[in-house]
Amino acid sequence: MSFQTVVDDVKGRVETLTTQGQKVAQISLDTLKQTGEIVVDKFQALVKTESAAAKELYSVTKLSFDKAIADGFKAFTAAPISYLPPKEKFVTVYTDTVTLVSATGDELYKTLKTGFTSIQAEILGETPVKKVKTAAKKATSAVKKAAAKAA
Image (cartoon, rainbow, N blue to C red):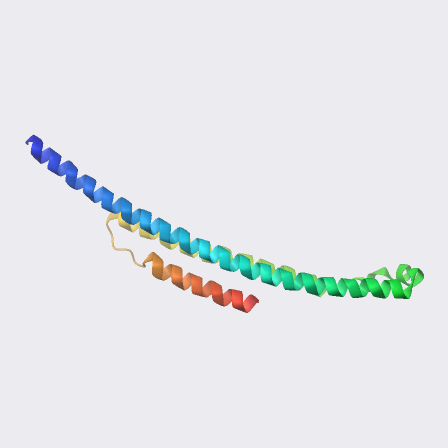
């Protein structure tokens, strides 16, 4: 075995590893980009939902406070619970938030799992079952549908 053969062999392996490294970096970047989009979309939906709920709760609370002032101290102390906003509003806001956060976690998990599977396939030299971009686009569209449903 000559020195030139060893050099050519090492050069071929390094080129293969470099190509794989570039593909892994691209897959990782695409996956991170898609997870960022998911987080931003879900966060915006959460802010919209929470803002609307906060405005509604504020108006209901202000009406209750105004009613308590108008009715007087004796009426308020006789039945203070009747002046509280309905608990259904709080439960609805909590349920919507939990649903949105849970859906975000699911979408992030699917996107990251797909990216990880693609990276593994690239390193092992296999053909990935799903491309990251396709899976991430599906995940993003599902997130947008869920966000529109929540809003």
